Length: 397
Image (cartoon, rainbow, N blue to C red; front, side):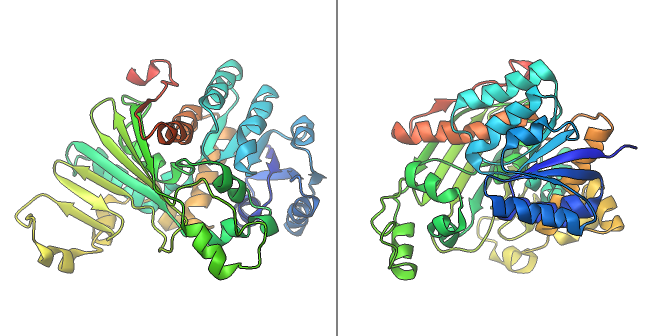
């Protein structure tokens, strides 16, 4: 089989990591071009390709990468603001797209992605790696087998202390600083929402109808700067727009609710808070526990919590998703506990064998829309805001 020619666009921390630890070692494609607007980052990408035995053209313009006849597909790992423009340009040039995650800046961008895909039918995959996490896929398997009964509520969050990354954004040329300075939104919803959307069959028999978002005050970054970067005259008086904790509640067509929490500018441990609640049981990431209905239930059964907390692994032998059972047998590889490797393995397989992408443009549009809609809701005093139907009614089929 002829290898796919890849143009790799965006070589900051995330992009370079994916290139070095996943895409190049996988050897499923040839990286023929690398691109970043910062020449030194592009050079690191070219050096990585060379070290792996390849040869990539170095560019600082993504347009030139897309124009390159040797490029069959692009991997977009650039700053959030550029994702949609690059993806649109690539699809119009009939170059397949694997686009990293981030929220939308306007609903019109989501529609542009959908419309351009429908006009060109260019393969498109949204790189939400958490949809391929072991626990997320185990819980999906358990839900599909009916262990949790009828699903009523799901929750998740991006709980990640990013204060250093944000406040050193100028030094590290990181896009989060400008976003936290100027915007107030659920700016990174898809890590938690992606696996939940798959469980609730969003776009495939169900859809998100409306949301409300509420943001706390913004105090965490100011305090962090005073203590860890007091000499930064540019930032110490900055008024950050982004609330420290943003809570978003989504209502779905079949009555389920979803709670998303963005929590990135206060001291805390990392968690995605993945929680699934049904009429017969639940899973909770915080304790890595499965709780099934039965004689042990009770409002004050602390004995169960002490004895069974972190019991999810005991269910894994029977309920690990078939994809993960094979993956474990073959050997888990790559970063983020293997999610990144599995995600790209599936992307290349679907691309080369002309299969539907498991996380498609309609998923991307619906999940990215949360950011733009939450920004509207917060600005309107937490008013409800309606979701567009990016499938144009096909979700009911």
